Length: 132
Picture 1: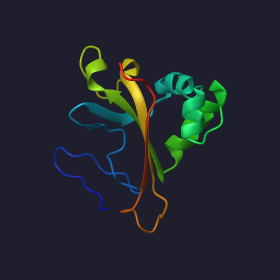
Picture 2: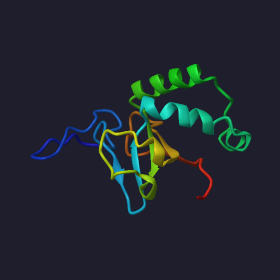
Picture 3: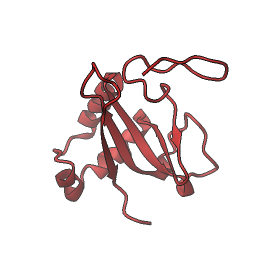
């Protein structure tokens, strides 16, 4: 992907430049925000559910281990993790940079498996919260 920087635009991340660094993606019903440290406790709670562990082929981690994984994922340019927010659950309106923990319903992982071809990625979507 090419790197863009124009009037009103931020620079795109060099490797895996799919979304401007630190930016969110808004849809009709959901918003994808970068996985922040503030999200870790809720994510950790989700990953204590045996059904989610089985569905994601994951092992249970301690909260400290979850923070370590968060740190490593945010430093890896070939992995992008977003938290999925339900727009209807956001209190007080969406504010970019605010983690909006109250609206967390899942996550999206994007893996750039071939650093030589950044147009191809593996995407995993996890809906962790039951229907409300």
